[in-house]
Image (cartoon, rainbow, N blue to C red; front, side, top):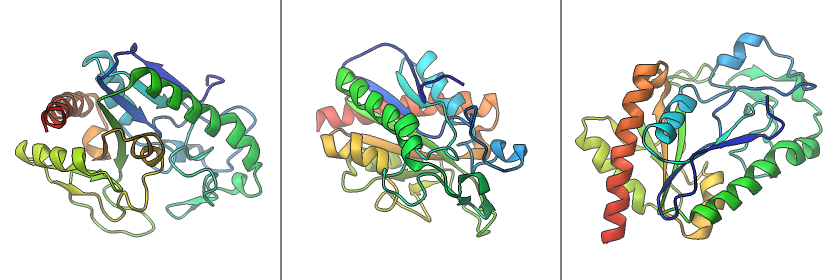
Length: 241
């Protein structure tokens, strides 16, 4: 993997729409041993399945610049506060991550977390976006707590719901099963957007997509087109409000 824990696609387009993907990669740097079966790196505990394909299409086909993680959430969860107990996760969805027990958290912060968020902050300052899209995916049913999650798209927000409310309505108009994300909301899990959007007064949509819907290229293309259209309409609505 690259020495830097992120990559950026597309040029600066001040005032436009940009994409952020904190869990877009399952890469594990050389020298880090997680102590898990290699197959788990293709599991949702290591990567937001399908998100990279959606976001790269948004950047390359729909002109929405993107900032994507290039390191697995099992190495360092970039979508957490830096003092979070599971920033370097020792378990996820019932799976023990033994290699992370006693890990050098300060090193992971300095190597991955701080460079990722510093670069994101500088990139957003240069872009001055009119709307930020934070793209994640979720598994239909967790292994540790089997419970069907029937919706197709969930929206998260903390205090600033202005873009999310519009997006929910627009997804509904497209026949999607959509609403406030469950079983967790943006009141509980919104670290990156709390820091880079809400704290800066920037409107955003934090979108969770059911991962089986974007597990192949056709699904990724479909959702990229859908999100590009809906986000453009959200931005126009915000600008006219």
